[in-house]
Length: 268
Image (cartoon, rainbow, N blue to C red; front, side):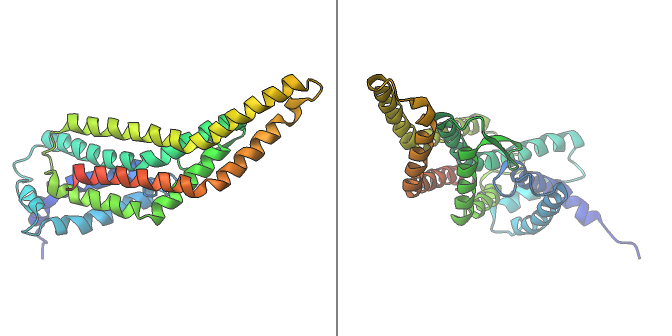
């Protein structure tokens, strides 16, 4: 007995747009977009997630149900569907990229500290970003990633993405200018976080440098360069250990700010 697939074909355009909007977070987003996750696993996860989300969006009370009902596989051309799929992928990429900015800011702050401590040449490989990173930058990045998971950032990111189907109609996003403004504002927040994280250690190293300069001028016989690097590393490490709670608090506040802005723009 032949199987009638016409009903499934009618849902194909809407499901494809849901699939590509969801797939955006598996490219840049923390945890889900990690390069440590094999590509086949990511494909399986996004397919499974789309098959779970799409039927939920068809419920009558949801605004997304009316949006999905407007798509028809018989009347929609392939070129029109391709353009709308590209826009949906852009929305998913924007959410994932914005959620990763606080983690990148922590790594930039650690890179600033590496340069001031003299550890800039002691690089390690960061598998998450597939690039070389300083020792302190890598420690800060992993610390931020752990806090992201503990604080439920991945759950809020998924809630934002799923809520965007009700706020932003499939194939109907026209706020590119407002999206660019949002990203520019989040980039400003990212650089501010990097400076705030690195400020205590860089201020201490400035004072250490001034103190070693006075010692070198007053006691020329003392070879300050032979012990200068050790003093900078020990003093910076002590300050970082003492400021762990402060750094975590600043990062979590910024992370919540970024996620609230994303939720307000895409979902609420």
